[in-house]
Length: 230
Image 1 (cartoon, helix red, strand yellow):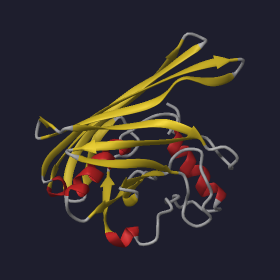
Image 2 (image 1 turned 60 degrees about the vertical axis):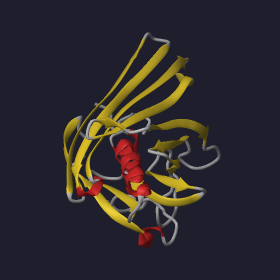
Image 3 (image 1 turned 180 degrees about the vertical axis):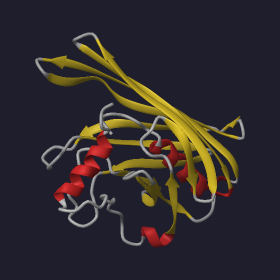
Image 4 (image 1 turned 30 degrees about the vertical axis):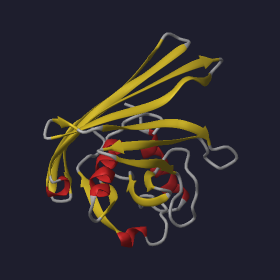
């Protein structure tokens, strides 16, 4: 099994920093003070298992496969999570899929169909109106360890949040080629984030209101994403 891209990025970041502690995402000053810090523990690096989300408990499964014909490479994968407890006011689940098509020419890879990740959600078995879409949107050219970045949106029960990848670490702000986490925006203002480094993920969610569950749903969907490119 290949070392996943985001995991490799964290290891590389720690090496560049001359220490073994995990890299942490850089966040706007004040965001941590304005949000609840919720640990998503137990996710680890496996294909399935159980996790906790604060005082709530859940389970997940995920998979990633890649196959080709010597010229084309087709990457496919996805996962599902289900969690119940006070953090989500009952029960919440998400079902996600991604696809990406590449072309290999003379030892080089080119994108034929860009990476796209789609998720749907349900509450106690009842579908929630909306979806999450995350896609490769640009290249981070001219920066050390540069690579593809990602962005997208979450439509969730009447709320729309923007999603942007976080590539910078706290401290030296050394950019990584794969996302260390994601930021969630409402009307141009960041209202939350998820730090994907390590076996436990850290979610920064609004303390109350409909945006809290929207951020938690998006964060869990991104936490189960298992893809060699991050």
